[in-house]
Length: 242
Image 1 (cartoon, rainbow, N blue to C red):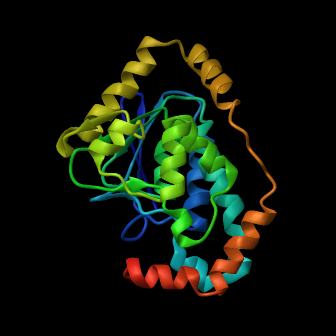
Image 2 (image 1 turned 120 degrees about the horizontal axis):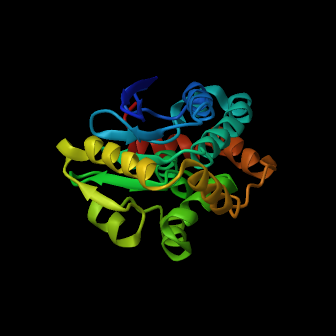
């Protein structure tokens, strides 16, 4: 589910869950528990193959219906916040498609490298018919700025790497073969160039500016509706092979 390796003082966390590391209840819980344990060193977050993470496992939402939605959404928010508020440097190595929740996870990192190979990154949740919880929206805005975040969220566009770089959704593009190594190098640089306590406090001050609305009632209601009214199923039938 999560492969953990070490490169000096940097921990590399590789999402390796199913074919596309789709976010389900178990993966979200694993991300939360893993990132809440980091107190020293630095972290690189990446995926496997040509996919960083394809976002929420919508088939699982359809299969589980409203009871699954009510368990899943708080776990999703917790995973986003665990990465976002992790007190050590967190660098994303976006090795491929980073869609919806995958894009939010990348945005939650302190620095985002993305492959130069063809890959889509964006937040098409509105096209699925469901709203993101407010922490996800705030994290994307924190990473890319309000104008780029607004366009990304309201259009649902998936950006290729060069466009993602141009709008600020990622920070640098790197050849696929050098991606993880470059991310590790940058994480190591952050560790050596900034005192750990200074980095931790500065990051806490920045991330505390993000509004975290805990009331998920309206968001949950709409996810439950889309899981049962046919909209989500029709979207998946058109766009995704199971």
